[in-house]
Length: 207
Image 1 (cartoon, rainbow, N blue to C red):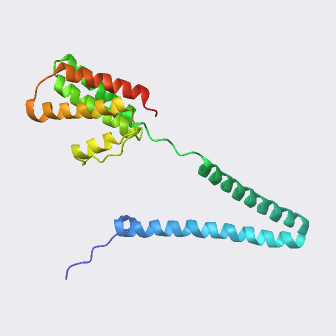
Image 2: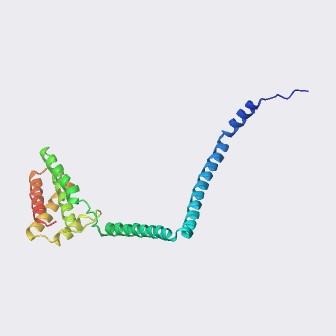
Image 3: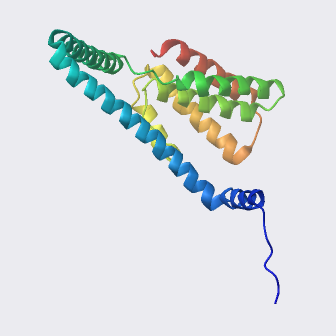
């Protein structure tokens, strides 16, 4: 008959500690620690409650002074929160960045670079887009990105612009469309006309 191995007390304690260090038991120990912390907090609150009850019997004036101070603090905190909310609601909304600055200006700058490279048709097209962005941002026209050129011409003809500028704008749109979709000719005069018109509209159309 095989003999049963014997273990010392130290070996038994070490084996038990090793088992308790494993993950399932470690989770239980963590829960026990949390429960102990919660119990300590509850006991502290019960101690304060007992102390206040004792204080209300032994020193009622001090008790009511403490209660009044606590209520006053709560009221002041609530009033402060209400004031912060009212200040936040009364602040003006942050203005959205100007599309003219964010879109039209880089388009115009890109047009200058293209013109300097002799690519006048692409430069005119960039100024065409920059001009439309300016008119859209300043609410001279209303236009969706998907609207065809026919709609664009109708909106430009009814735009609140001086007659000369309105007619020049419609004529340049027609010239650009012809060169862009048919001739593909780099016309320096087309670019120069767009550059001048764009400059006049940026300077004259109110923001």
